[in-house]
Length: 143
Image (cartoon, rainbow, N blue to C red):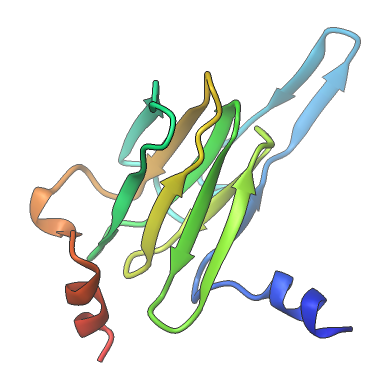
């Protein structure tokens, strides 16, 4: 394995691809999640991000206790995940593959294509106090 292959496989702690099962026939493809079988947490909240203007960024924070799973159900966008030691950037362009972002990982979403829709499944209900909004504060939590 060369260094490039190794780096492409390396994720910040706890982050990983979330491949979904799918069924394809002459009518098209259906990807799905069932119960807690395809996610490492019970879903307590679902939201979607769409209509992001060109050049704008979403995310830009970490969660103290909440894990999230992001899925590109339409179009594409880029996700950068960072645990304070390791950083990885991936293009999200397959609706049958998401990415897991555990609590304590910084996340930025950029480069949204026209018509992109990102569906997010969260392990906790919304809690404004559960966010770390400044990268410097995030890094301090890692020391």
